[in-house]
Length: 188
Image 1 (cartoon, one colour):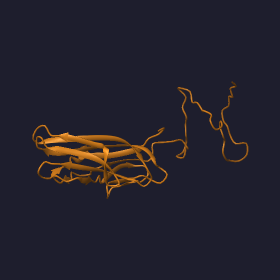
Image 2 (cartoon, helix red, strand yellow; image 1 turned 120 degrees about the horizontal axis):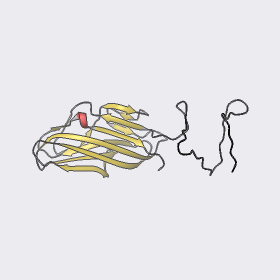
Image 3 (tube, helix red, strand yellow; image 1 turned 90 degrees about the vertical axis):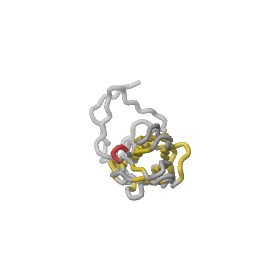
Image 4 (tube, one colour; image 1 turned 60 degrees about the horizontal axis):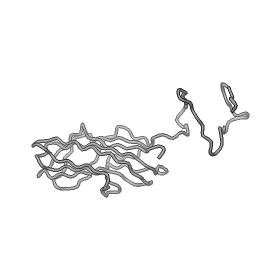
């Protein structure tokens, strides 16, 4: 094995592409070394698109009805793919793959033995493996449902959250503890 020691590598004429290695090679960066990338277009993979949205208020959820939850305020949205008016994250063109979605929804004042369900939905349909179910233990309970799911997504698919409770009357969310977030996973 040979070692090449230099301070700077430049293309010999003008600008263009500099190739390191060939197809099938592994480029190794040793432990303790840092790869510094200037600018915003590094060509290195990142966890975009990503988003996080909050309720922005304390909306109510109707009794005994599966209802879409609209998170109306964004904290971050790397690709402008989350729509605050519809509560939908739509997978951008060229960004299919595996995503991690996470949501916490806090419903206030449930009576004992009442149920509070939360779901992720794809294109309006509840996803069977992506839900959280709770039962209030004491009267006037605030119930936090936190759900996380890894999903294979395709371009243009839309993701939302939905809730259901059987309290007997409308219940309010605690907007300060409720959010919906997601990002594309790398290396899977």
